[in-house]
Structures are given as C-alpha cells and as structure tokens.
Length: 234
Image (tube, rainbow, N blue to C red):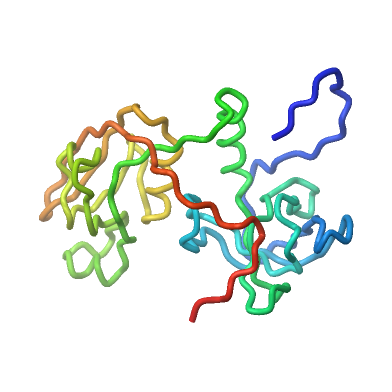
C-alpha cells in the first residue's frame, strides 16, 4: 500500500464484488522478468487452493502465463474488475507452466483497512490443526450429511485448549455461521480480530454443544517470495 499526499486524481481499478467461477476467463497484468507491463489471458482453473505457504488458505489458481516479477499485479475478470492479486507460481523451470496463484479480492478487501489503520495485518488464531470432513469421515461418524472441520490436534495453552476444544471434535459453525470445510474455518477465524471472542458449534461423540473462545494472534509465518517459482511437489 502506498500513501500519496497532495493528489486524489489517480486512475484506479475496482475490486470485484463477486468471486470468480472455475472456467471464467481472466486477464493478468504484471512486469515479467522486469521487461515492462505485460498482459496475458487464461482461465480460473481452481479456487480455494491451500498450498501450505503463508497464512492464506484460499488462493485462486489461474491457468495463464504468470512469471517471476508479476507478483502484485492484478488479475481481471471479463468486466475489468480485479478478482485477485498475483502471488506465486509453481514451476520446475522458473517460468510459467500454467500453474499460478492469486490472493482473492475478498482477502485484499479485508487486509486494506488494517493496513490503513495499523500499518500491519493481524489475524485471529485458535491454535488447532484441522482437516475437512470428507464423505468417508462423515460416514464413519454415522452422519452422512455432516460438513465442517475435524480437529486433528490442539496446541497446548492455545485459545482452543483453554476453551475446552479436543482432538476429534468437529467444528460446524463459527459465530453462528456454518463452516463447510477446514479452509473456510481458517478463513473465518483469521478474519476476526485477536482478543475478540466468538462461539464455536462443536459436534463431540454425536452430541452438539457450544464453546466460547477468545482468539489469540496468529503467530508470524515466513512469507513466501512473491510470485516466486516453486517446484511442483510430487
């Protein structure tokens, strides 16, 4: 974010109010290999990707030519609205192989007010490792329609431990809003302010209950190099 005093007449682009759909056309803009402004075209190939880098868990996967140096460039939908900010590529050759990732516009919208007010971004944290409830897990629990995030581990002395959360608990809602998978749980908790309190709806041994948890601050994580090439894991 850049603050400019004395001028307000800059041209600007609009962040999209709607998330993209898989298969939507996308235009990406950037500065590949310091060659200058470049635009490439492609499609949205996936959403809500968790690539286990940084705190974001819901990257947009883009099948378009994005290369080193394109980080921070916008990705546009067909209406010219920004649907994401280019962040990273997976590549064994340090060049585009059509697997690129962007931070969604919704995440950008949540970050901007914090940067304006505090100059930094803080995220809520409860101190658990979770995984999505799959159809197989749901069947094993005898609840075929169950959706949510199952707790695999609770960190000692974490907000979750203090609230009484246990391994094996299934979190189905946060603050009264349903949770469909682990990524959505992480996203909802991360969007809350550290120190705030929220209510978790938890299914434990077939019985539903509510737990109040006071959120901590997410520990600092090493940032990945922006739009850095990473070898695709096998």
